[in-house]
Length: 197
Image 1: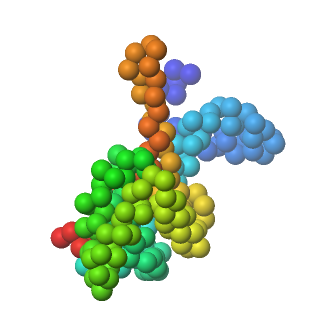
Image 2 (image 1 turned 45 degrees about the vertical axis):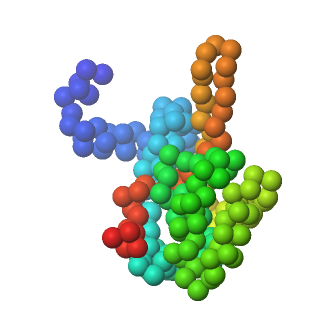
């Protein structure tokens, strides 16, 4: 094993490739999986997907495109774009039950994406979205998810949709609570927002 320490990372990668090929040829993918480990396998999967992810371009007139996927347009209604822009602006995530705290920001995004709609209609739409007893926010997120799933596979789409992320908090040994955050996992360096420039 000490002789491996004298190899460059590139040489180690070549050795690993050979060993992996030998295990596969022997029909022992189980040993290969055991050697790599599930957490590392998931990291590798994420890394492989990351290199395939397209940038998300938001134009000055609030059209959404995927430039690295034949410049395909993501066709969403203004209300869906407003919801999407809100979650893009908050990579830390937002709990649906706390959407009321983002009323003003959501109204701003909706006004920007729905130029022809009258302000009262926008405000009424936002009130539905931030009302925790109304299902409007779930419906909008489902629609956004459907649009992305029509354009790409589920694993890749998981980076673009608004999805759940649970965060555990411990205040003391007797007090534990969970934040059920909704996030867009797309790395923000892949977002080009011309509307904000």
